[in-house]
Length: 146
Image 1 (spheres, rainbow, N blue to C red):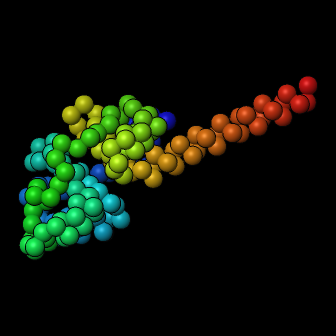
Image 2: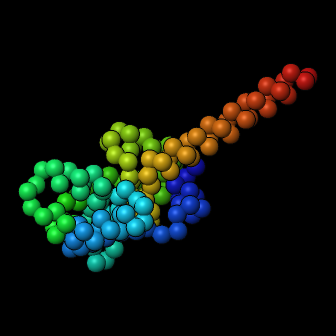
Image 3: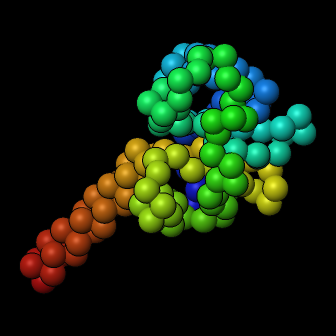
């Protein structure tokens, strides 16, 4: 399935934050929306980074400062890997696997149009495999009845 079709049917909006937001406000957004990562956008809506739960946890383990007062721009992953809305879900899953992360911003040109999680990709691949198995079963049944 193409990512744009998946997003149109499953994701109404993108939750994002800004580099100048505090980590506390970003963590609240993550928890409130039950998401593991979110894109970081500038005042023009351009993607400038990605903040994940892992970024926050790593900061807690490595820094001696008050993490919650830090700014998102200090912790975010800069220049995140992205995929295109015209890519397939399988391609997105391969990207996440290759780079060992669980969240992927989706772009349409320079515009951020969505976020995918590994769960989204796995559900789509499982659905595709189930459809393929059903087709194979139907072919097998049809060939036996000849």
